[in-house]
Each structure stands twice: as C-alpha cells, then as structure tokens.
Image (tube, rainbow, N blue to C red; front, side, top):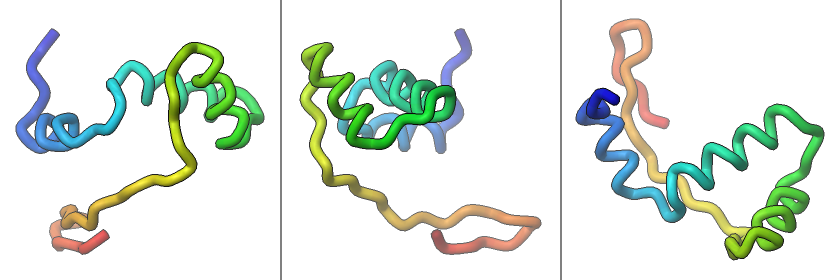
Length: 70
C-alpha cells in the first residue's frame, strides 16, 4: 500500500478514533438507513464507546484554483 499524501497524513494524525472504526461507521451510514444514534448503539455493542459530540476544524481547500475557507 502506498503512503498517504502529506495533506491526508496530517488529517489522519488528528483522528479521535481508529480509521477502521470511522470507515465502518461511514459505510453503514451510507449503505443502510441509520441515524447517528443507531450507529452509536452498534459501536457500543462492539465495545467501542462513542459520544454525541463531534469536532471539526476549519481549513482551507483549493476549489477551481481559488483557496476557500471551510
């Protein structure tokens, strides 16, 4: 497997949960009609405690050649 690009590597360092856990939750959320509450219950059943809070840092991305703040 190739090493992630530097920008992706910086994002992966700040994750609060293992990448595998996040990918499973995203897959279930996209595939099945689940709410965030349902996903939380499913993860608790597997021994992974997650909370209701979430965090997002602002960042700049390049869109059509211009830098935009998200």
